[in-house]
Amino acid sequence: MERYMLPLMSMRIYFESHGCSLNRGESKEMADAAEASGHSVAEAPASADMVVLDTCAVIQASENRMLARLRELARSGKPVVVAGCLPAVAPGRILEVCPGAILIPPEKRGSFNDAVSALEIKAMPQGRAAAKTTPRRPGIVEEVPIASGCRGRCTYCIARAARCGLRSRALDDILARVEFLVERGCREVRLAAQDSGLYGLDRDDGAGIHGLLSAVCGLEGDFMVRLGMMNPDTLRSVMGGLMEKYAHPRMFKFLHIPVQSGDDGILEKMGRNYAASDFLELAGTFRKHFPSGILATDVIVGFPGEGEAQFGRTLGLLEKARPDMVNAKAFSPRPGTPAAGVIRMPGRETVRARMRRLNDLRRGLFMENSRPLIDTTVRALVTENAKGGVLARTADYRPVLIRMPLARGLSTDVRVVEVRQGWCVGSPI
Figure 1 (cartoon, rainbow, N blue to C red):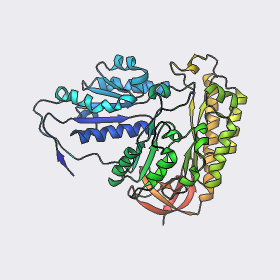
Figure 2: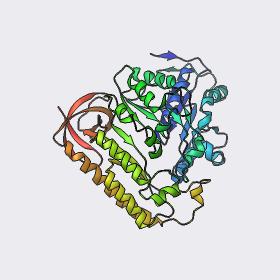
Figure 3: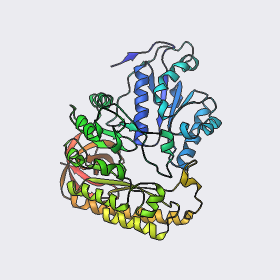
Figure 4: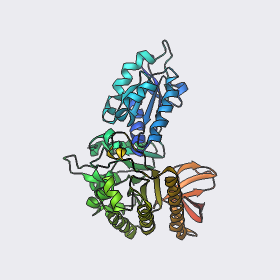
């Protein structure tokens, strides 16, 4: 439904988000809140009165990209709001490259509308006509934040400092957000958090992750649910009963367990609070219940103290667990974290060589895990456009490339005809 904005009381705001699913979900909620307050979402910075950059600072390269982007935005002369993790960990660096920027760290996201209101008269061109806009339409895939912060003590993690302690969202608020998105066409709801298994432990309503999944899956509408990552030590405490929740037909059979290393000594230095065998046991439980489900994990390569033997144990663990997705990153020392003060690290060329070996293994595991699907028929949800066609997801969350222009949001039967590095290729039936 179209609506009309009042002159000098509405602004065109451009939102740009970087980083994790949690960040993207929070950014979209800010955009929807701005629209609910009478503003409109611009499609590009050039057509906006104000720019919001939602930032990531998980590694140094991410921070450098954020600062470079801020330099570009600062040259426009338009008001810039900087949200996300970077304002919490490097406010001075932001203001160096973008003087006058308004900083909104994660715990202050609720103040976004107040910041916009304070800028309305300053940012709006005098005498501009009322803007005729159509509200933002949610995508086929949308992230729904369920909690921020964690209770971990990882020695390398700057996000812990940026997002502070655990803050779970009220169950009713989550359900209302899911209903809002599904009513407007969302077909894949991604429940996002730094550690989803911790959901509700800081609240008195007793919902927990089990209760949350039951409530979300019980809502009306045509949609699927993907649960975000859970650390192994947290997952151990909620695994009982979790696979029963995953059996619901609305749940994607997708489990993200970041292991980070296959060496117990390195895990101890990382402050991860579990052993490699714990990850292997959890992965095995998931495989037992959902043999063709997608198992995802994260690995840090080149952590201080990682020698060839330690890295070899990581490769060995992956060969045993056989995850379908491995998100690998080279260790990046972050200011203020305990690991940043450790000097003894593998050399750059050593880390690059290890990354190549890990990526070769990752690609091989996906292909081996996916080959049994060849010549089978699966039901898949079309979620995004892709080069040469569209990308769809099976109930096991396996990606299938369909080489024809199908509508996003469509569920269709597909025959898998080929497996590539990172996806299957299917033909609609």
